[in-house]
Image 1 (cartoon, rainbow, N blue to C red):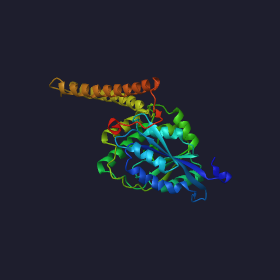
Image 2: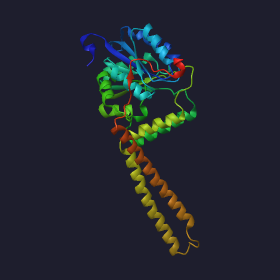
Image 3: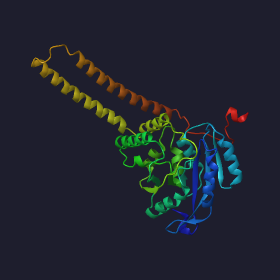
Image 4: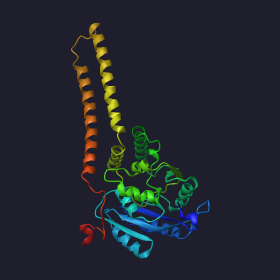
Length: 330
């Protein structure tokens, strides 16, 4: 339950995974600073940002120096140093594990997401008793048509294969109950997609409309290769439904093979086949070989993921000092 029931303000921890935030973090913290003072949601509940956790994910720039500077400037900033680059989801979970607020907000470093929207998200969560509230952009992301189209296609495929109607509405800008966020970070191991894991333990999820802003003066760090890997990661951690899809594809292939056999047999009996069926044979072999290889590939991915989890590979590791590159140290 929120502290608002006892008259004290609701506390919010803001978790920011930092990869290339050398230039944008100062502006983001300047936007967050006013929210560290007591404010009220539209329904009159007092709240404030009690801490901002900057999780250094060992990117290619000098974000670590910026984080150290901001920690000296703002008393509410808490640096978290990862030992190497683990990725956005691992960095987010590391921040959640160290959070202390009654609610946890996850926010990107690139200035696309407006901290002013936190009030509306918290208001919706308290009003409707939601456990998680995702930001739901009302405008298209500021990317090219090709990337936006690929993203829409990937979300549609995810909804079909994973079976979660709201999968396409996952967003890195989210508000999560603090207890749930910290519980999630304690069991969500390596190879588990953060939002899929959230859906395992929550039942009340809301969506708050927001307006995305343009990214800060740099292109997105997500190349098509990284986005494809991100999509594959989602599919591999979504459970057995994709594997069942491959099974259904195998059954469909068998039925298709029966139909082809019937057509070829009828053609043979009616004298329509004058040449040995080399072409049709190659087509059939190619089709079924592809189906088998696809199925084996998916099974291999599942086995690799299972081995990674079984061997106890850590999702992240926190250090007491920044991890700097050789160029930064010189």
